[in-house]
Length: 176
Image 1 (cartoon, rainbow, N blue to C red):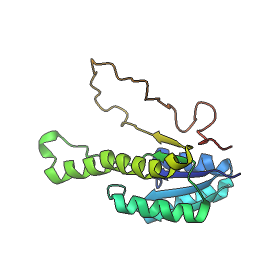
Image 2: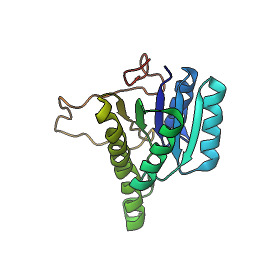
Image 3: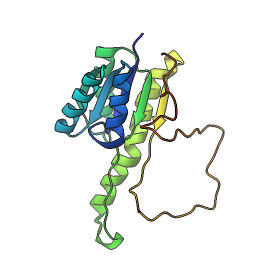
Image 4: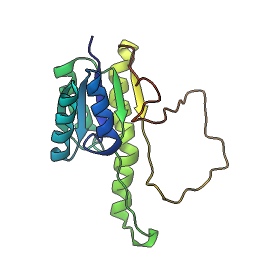
């Protein structure tokens, strides 16, 4: 049975590379991002790699748009097995030069985008008691990093590192 995979932020970077890798596995890949040109390119990458692709323009900061995108993807490919949140935005400028609207947009996309994607994915996966949700984070090379003195771990949290290489096989959501 073919896997159904959804990837947010799929028009570029890690998300687009991940989409291409799932395409090479023959997956049906739902691609969500705002940039239609990048989405079209990512869809072509997936099909050229051997998978099926559906590009759905949507803003992950808007829960209704994410819900609608997921409904469209499931209508075409069936139940979602794997949902990968990658979409993010940032502003690279000195703090004093960043406007409140820029901070708001970064928060809406980078935080609420992951919340919206996770909520939409869980609403579908819980009733089936199956599925995998992956949260991907990255930072610009050379960006300043601050150490956190508190341990960042819990029994409910797992870290998947090396998304493009998958450190082995990518998550399957219970189906291969």
